[in-house]
Image (cartoon, rainbow, N blue to C red):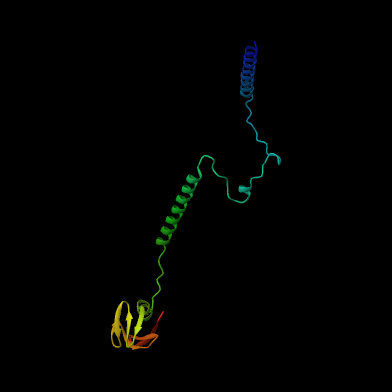
Length: 155
């Protein structure tokens, strides 16, 4: 007998619930006015992510998807930036030929009366990238290029 009374009570609750949902639906259908959101100060909740300027995370994207979208946006931004740089006329500075030759010479070591420059063994009088070896000292080599002297020191 207790089980049957329980079943009857659950049926009554289910019917009541169904009618209440139906009534809410009918009353909402009669009211054609748009629902106005509550914009009072109490209704607006503080969201620290918005206040910090970080925006709100899309709840339909996983963090991995969000990271992938940010990476793609950054890639597109970089491509646009490169395209803008290519479209701008390049301003080329004329580099002094002596400076260019000096930068191309890499002194790697000094041995007695010779030196190792750009993976080659050289002595006084040899040519390296158009520059003539004038003098080899124990911590530097003196070169001459187009009549001007310059020194390359050991690193």
